[in-house]
Length: 305
Image (cartoon, rainbow, N blue to C red; front, side, top):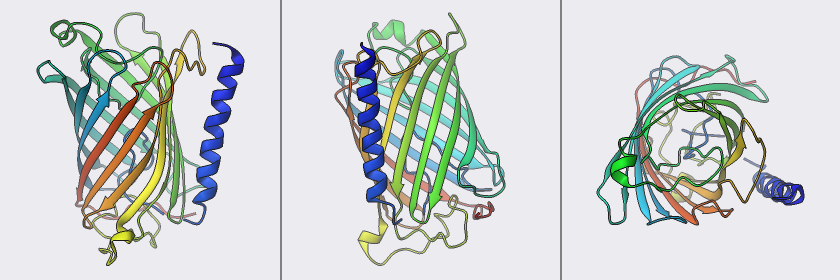
């Protein structure tokens, strides 16, 4: 790949981000609406359960469906932990357990800033058959290329780290995650990636008291269905590895898609994201779906600026 094509890809991505931000500058937030991007802590004592099924059209090999179950708990106003399990069903093959993840993230400040900084760490106890796109990093595709009986018994343990920067302004929220994945076996060469999202939260979210997380149980149900609707855009992609860092569209995966959420009630929320592959290594299409239930605790005690 030439340097010119990499620059052109970066320019197109920047134009998409800028155009969407300008279109939504008049907008505050609820529980994180994204499928891959992480931003704020959940809020002390709050619990969120999520079921996240994906349907993927594979570029290499048969099409497949994946699914993740996630449990998040707000330990303190700044500290959240999560447990995840995942599996997949490849067309023509039996359903397979992909493994588990344990993650935690910590907001470094007790109050909201212009740019809020969060640090994230995750231990991934997966096998080589795990296909859920929690993130993408490094080079090449992630479709199943080896025989399933071999892949399901091949460990793929990884330690993932993220540096997360996010900003909230009334109903508008934006977040960027820089991702590093370090294998715990083999060469130990780290892979890199990114995720970002811009989102306009539903009017049904009451954000007048500052903290934007852990508030689903406190918000009043909106009278109008339109007020329950949130919308935005999310993009995920790879940034090479420890030997070659950067954007190489012919060798990496990159996806972008609109994010839509709908608050069924103050506790229940639906979300969907039809994501489209942008490169030769990306799967052409991924339909991402989710249902979330949130309860307990209290509002985040993080103070506004």
